[in-house]
Every structure is written in C-alpha cells, then in structure tokens.
Image (tube, rainbow, N blue to C red; front, side, top):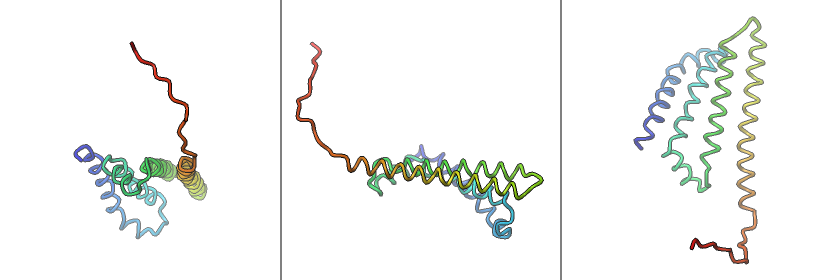
Length: 147
C-alpha cells in the first residue's frame, strides 16, 4: 500500500483541482471549450488511481477475469491522451472557433473509437481463449537430463 501512495496522492490532488474548477464549468454550461477540456483532463487523473497495484489486485479479485485491469488502464490512458490533445487544440485557439470545435470533435471521436477498439479486442481475446479447446497432448514429453 505504501508503494501506491504516489498514485493516490497525485490522483487526489488532480481530482481536487477538478472539483475546484467545477463551479466555473457549471456557470459556463459548455460554452467555454477550453475550460471543459481542462476539467476533462483533470478528471482523467482517475487513471492514476487505476494504475496503483492495490487497485489492479482489487479489480482482478472482483471481476475474476485475469488481467481485466489492463484494458481499464489502457482505456483511461487513451482517454487521457485524447483529452490532452483536445486541450492543446482549444488552448491554441485560432481565428475560427468553428474549426477548432470541429477538430476537437474529430479528435474526441477518434479517441473514443480507439477506446471501443481496445475494449472490443480484449473482449474478443477473452472469448477466444475461453472457447478454445483445452486438450492435453497424449504423447509423452521428451525430457533431457543434464548428466
């Protein structure tokens, strides 16, 4: 648990910063894309919680699926990366706000597709490994002895 302190402290501080920005986000009601992308990036700090070893162990125990925490962490990291790019796009701004919003929507759609692809491929791989025939070979194995 002491090794997870860095994950929890950093993630907690970033989530606290997101909570401090929340009243301004509610007042803006989605009109300020820069503020929205900052809050999404700060909220994406949840990836730090899921990457902690104790949380990974907990996810494995709760779901019973081997390595289930991997797609969860990968999906959150991909979302965090997408939020970072959207933040850069909105921070950069430009003379045409419609183009900035269009680029932001394209980026969000692309990263959402990547997240769905990660989930789909993990689900498919889990299904394939569970449906594969589990047979043991009848031929005895050849052992080499070091003599």
